Every structure is written in structure tokens, then in C-alpha cells.
Length: 173
Image: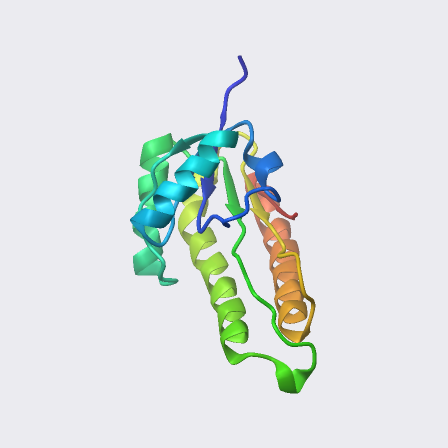
């Protein structure tokens, strides 16, 4: 039986169809916002992958994220793949119709990606083919989603170039 990949899935989306192929053959550790969400998420994850209970956090600060990353690394023994798939909403088509909360949510997601990678990389380096996968949101396109898409594309390319010498691959999905 092949070894299961150790996957950290922070802030897992409610619809796992988009990422099921990424996590199907892995041992998944996840975080979520509350215990009710955790129970529902665990049921969905159990349908497609082996999963471990996650530490609860919703804040995007280094102090709030670090314990989840450490807990994941301790639980799984390593982090071989970080899958970042935040659920983001892009309402409004014209600039004047954009919703401030959507823009704030997208910029917070960029901050969260930075913080998670900063915390998780020490637990990934030196591992067997470590990988960071950034899942681009699907759905409505507007200035907010375009801004986020351009930013994560630039982040993925730059991080991939820098981390390649350490054996860490960064890619968009």
C-alpha cells in the first residue's frame, strides 16, 4: 500500500469537489472556524480521505496561525503538502458596485497565505517532494477576484523560484 501524503488543509472550503483530487490519497489535517463546522467538515472529508481533527482558528495573524501549523506537524509528523483554498465571494461587476467586505476578505486571504507559508515552510523543507498548492476560487469575476488572482499568481511564481532550491514546489490549481 502506498504511503499517504501528509496534507495540511487550512480553512477548508465547504464544497470539497474542487480539491478532492488533491487530497484523495492523503492523510488530511484541517482547521475550521468552529466545532459545528468542524463536525460537518469532518463528515465530508471522511467521505473522500483519511482525516485528523484540526485546531480551531479563524484569525489571520502569525500568533493565531502558528499553533495550528505546529499542531498539524506534530499530529502528522510532517507537512508534505499545504493546500490553500479559501472560500471567497466576488459580488458586483462594476467598480462602483463592488462590496467592501469582499475586497477585505480577499486581501485577508492573501495575508493568510503569507502567514501559513511562513509558519509551515520549516515543517516542509527537507521532506519528500513538499508542495504548496494555491487553489484559485471559481465563480464570479470582477476587479476584486482579478486582484486576488494576479496577486496569488505572482506569489506562487516568486515563491516557487525562491523555494525550488530547497525542494519545495509552489503551484496554482
